[in-house]
Image (cartoon, rainbow, N blue to C red):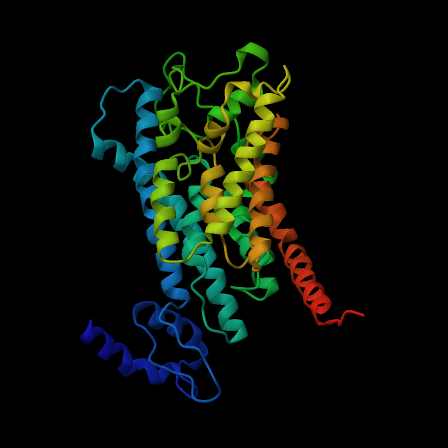
Length: 396
């Protein structure tokens, strides 16, 4: 690494002001700071120095996502083998099937998203930020495995340009970029975002008799009365163990609650995620799950799922852990975090249980509360100001 740094430092002057390639300074600086920690320090004023910069924060989140990434790739292979009736359950065979199935999506998300960020940074003369390191892997993880790459490219471009760059770039977006991409895909190409064929990769093979690629929540949304139940790809009932560990079809990165909890532990130990948001979101989801369980009817037969099963299925746990806790788009005040998290959890289960046209509500719940987060913080701050003002007013 020392030799590489010495070589890069030797060409660095060409990319600085007055150099031959000064117009490409942002691009060079982005690669340089990605490989090495900058040695510049502040020269004036009072500053707080911390080793945990944005690059380390983003890398920590990526590490926390690795259990979900690795399991999701393996689960793609497992669901494929079940769907086509292949009895081979060799671990690496299933893993590499999933790896090559999602690799084009991951590359598409990073190439398009980072490409746009590089271009915008060059035009503005700004530094290239590390925010898309996380968004680039989150986006394919919350999409069906068979999402066409051209659709993903269009959606990523829309999200990065209109939900991030027009507001000033990293740290200024008020909506979660990955969820904006998912929402654009859902509303622009609904046939590719739902149904029985988009969540299981069949390749060139045909499914066996009795196959259903519908997600468990999709099955519940289309069922009525006593027909409400959740089955795996080959028609066997799902146990809570299957739900918790993620052995069912869905957006490939968000099915395993167990792997999400491993990532959550990393985020909480490092202080990246707010436990207040996570705790209140889980409480809100559980509360709404209890309400829905006790007030079911034939149109909304949600008695089949117990409240804790609601928290283990679909994208709820993933959205609460990796989306709702985004420090840029979530609430900043301490009481605001509790309110924000509770509403995310409650609204997610509310949409899931009482909107049969959209069986998964986590995405819309987080995006909706992203919009209200500034208002919640405003109310909390003003309530604190008013309370302190009352303390200062002398009693007559």
